[in-house]
Length: 329
Ligand code: ACO
Image (cartoon, rainbow, N blue to C red; front, top):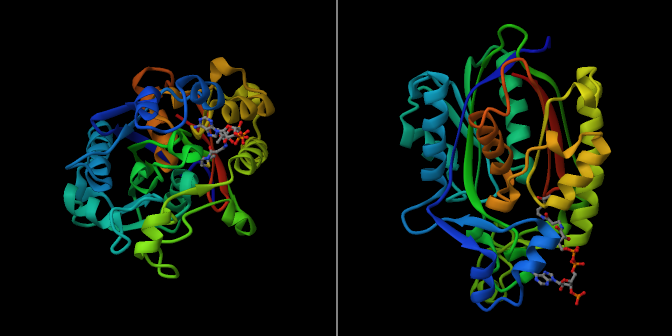
């Protein structure tokens, strides 16, 4: 495959109306403080989906915004790929619900399960389908309503996550713009460090499961932290090698927004000064698959990315999964 083949032509994002601050969480009776959360994670607030809001509605809103920028109508979409760990229903995919909501009558739509790496995986699937000749216009979504699968009695996890959706329209490359390199990996031997123990077909929801919260996210925080730093550092190296570029050639690094300390460690390893790193974890918390496309949309709208600039994306999440992209805009 000759790169660049696929380029980003439009982005959009959507978040729920309700903001939950760290102090709001403490006021809910969780034994935590704003100081602890800010110091350990960098998170100050997150958005929480409420009545009438769903993964489908947030994704559709983000998709419409991205299509507007791209100058693309819904019937022009060939593929909709949605990365998520919190689908509205387990069957069918949320992608088909988004398809119906936006009227993408010609598209093939499906979800992918790669947790926080969902958008990076989705972008590579989009590029691959375009390389095969089966698609010209692809909508890649990363979207989550993680607060609905969060154990609100577990202070180790409930302070971390937020809801939102990010959308990207991908078309065939012109003028040397688009994906210059891509890398994905996973390690399923570490699956139990970050997972939902029950709620799937193997251990369905029962009154006991609901009572002990094992249908919600469970995490070994320190192990996740160490693996995230190691794997995101590796992914940055691979993406730069693949693009035959040095860190000094990268105008902006957009890492998965999990924790400011993970972001700083990744940037340090990659040799990127923090002025060239996009950070919004303070306002959104960890929105998993949505975090990178939300950050990308913000960065573009704020003028932090201009035509000709080179951006590196790096993600890590449950699985574990990780991956990276270098993209010329
Ligand atoms: N408020 C107050 N105290 C808390 C809280 C809280 N919300 N959560 C944990 N603590 C306590 C612990 O109980 C522990 O107390 P103890 O020493 O009496 O046992 C103490 O704080 C230290 O806990 P650690 O887990 O060692 O704290 P650490 O510095 O590792 O920070 C954190 C925890 C923030 C979860 C960190 O490990 C982390 O960010 N890990 C990565 C997790 C992550 O980002 N997961 C998201 C999915 S994967 C991804 O997106 C990359």
